[in-house]
Length: 369
Image (cartoon, rainbow, N blue to C red; front, side):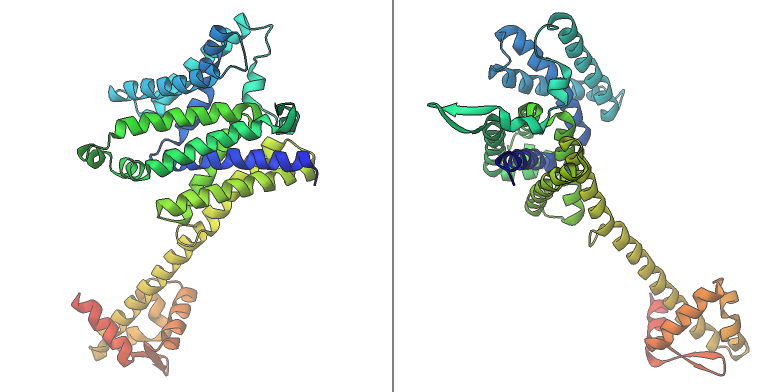
């Protein structure tokens, strides 16, 4: 593995963790689409800051981007509070309007400057190792490594220092306000960090991958655990896995690195969606099947008990006609009878079904409830 390959994977992993940690709170607050909106609207903040500073390397570009992210959130909430449209519609109104203004300003006023939508939205990780940071004449690594690492550190400090406030404001904003935790301030600081993270990662990975890292790993982690602390750890781990596996997928396929990493975030979410122990699609299907079988066993014991009490109705407990009385398919009836025999709820003699002691207890328990 070459040094450039290692640096690309390290930068992508730092971006993945920085995005995933904040994304956890966006997913829990049901604000996933806000990350997409912010990742585009911050372009206007970058453009305005560029017109003021006349430099595409000025740190004020980050400040402008963060402020525009906060403005985006404020406008969305202002429209949403009117109760005339829902939050998703408000995002759909604000995000295209602000983004289109940025694109118009770039095309009309900055056509001869290297500040275009491709550079901002479609960052290329393959070029990240070539933009080096030098200190006292020494090459100390890619600039993106330090910028994304710094953003990750800021995000980590915010989460660690305000973990209790974030947790309470995310799950019960009213209680947080009553306890004096200022959930509104926490909310806007979180959105400012989302803006800062998005613009800080643009040059290296592009906005599409920023959104993928910010939403897919937390969404996958949400399916794996109910604890916030574990969700943060799982999100970071899934983000790192997606970054590294996506790089090698791109290497094998000779494809876009960012596109391959975004694909792997989707693959990771799909795996969690299918195989998560409690909330996965397969686990839920098995649970529903188990509930169906348990209900059928209970129905069977109640049916046998009810008709065994009246000798003239014993014919309804015949194996050959049971499926007709219970409105089951013959195959399903055969499976339930076999299972009930196996676990000792019923016995079969000359085609007639009778309850065992355990089966009788089960039926009486259901009748009593």
